[in-house]
Image (cartoon, rainbow, N blue to C red):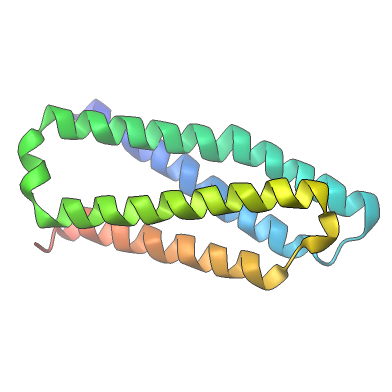
Length: 138
């Protein structure tokens, strides 16, 4: 069980860290012009595909393995709430992907505020998920 938890946490750190890094990076893109802006967007895109997707897949896959290893945990309210927050996080992940694709086509469409909001949302979701997983309030 310890190995499953370790790999699950590695995936979570990889996924969330990449999301936070990319949103911070894209928030700064609005200050850049021309080739520099396009390079920032390319770096964000590469980080998304190489970090976010891989980390997210590891986190989700090993989270499922953990539930299979201990099916009784599915009856606990805190886990159901955590899964709900993970679904919201997946929605944020998909939204960020769509914005990166849009920015590849129209680099001028970068909105600093939007990426700051996404960054804050990812941080808040991470905190709530961690609190549920550690405190197990219900």
